[in-house]
Amino acid sequence: MRIQYVSSATVRIWDGLWFTPENGHTVEVTDANVVADLLTHPPSDFAVAEDEPLLTLDGMDRTRAAQLAMAGIASLDELAEVSTEREQELATEMNVDAGIVQQWVDGSEKIRTERAAALVGAQSGSAIETDSEEG
Image (cartoon, rainbow, N blue to C red; front, side, top):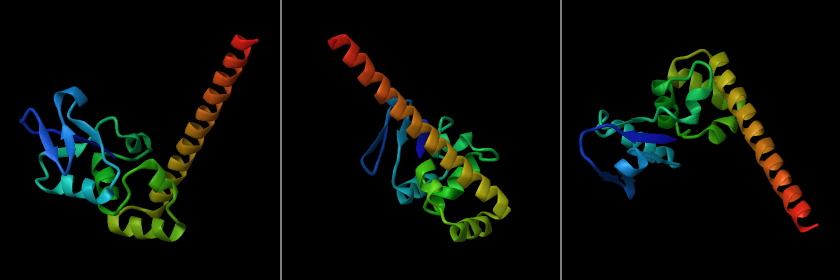
């Protein structure tokens, strides 16, 4: 999950993560436990970054994304792997309708599939260009 340092210091280092002006005070954090720590200790210093991919899902906002992190899900890929049973648990934990959680899971699976297709297409295009240049 992309996390942004929003307090006043120029540089903030947390658990080996550097939040600096050079990176827009924004870092990709892959460990959901670290995300949860950042968002809760102290809660006003860090926020889900505005460019976090989870925020592209219908009905998702920074608060809901933070709740997912607290539940151990810090990325679209992790959300895409959620089982039907876990969807129900998340709905209860987050106090939302299970259909909304299912919509997020389906949306994350769609985005993941689209990314994979784009990557394969880009690699195929690259190989074709390379072959034509050599020939």
